[in-house]
Image (cartoon, rainbow, N blue to C red):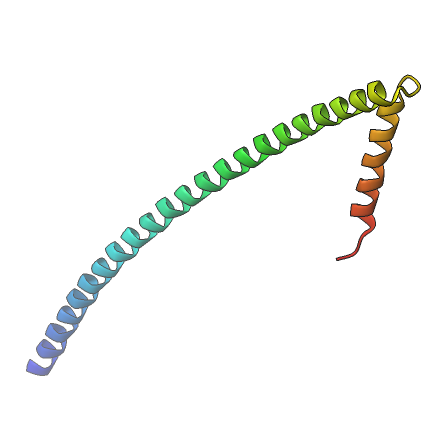
Length: 107
């Protein structure tokens, strides 16, 4: 009879210890997962900010390049006294040539 009582007592304490350890590990894993989620959220927000800045910078660069090329075209046309639109043709042709060289060049 005492063997059964001891076995029950050991099982009871094993269950208690198991529940205790499980609660500790569960709370630790929950803390780590919360920290990982907050770190992931911060990294995602930073990445989105970088993408927004990149898009804005790209838009402004294209916008500035457009005005720069228009200015060069007007300058070439007025300086060399070409046919009307000649400066635009030269700048446009050079831009298309540069774009095709970039596209078709191999690394």
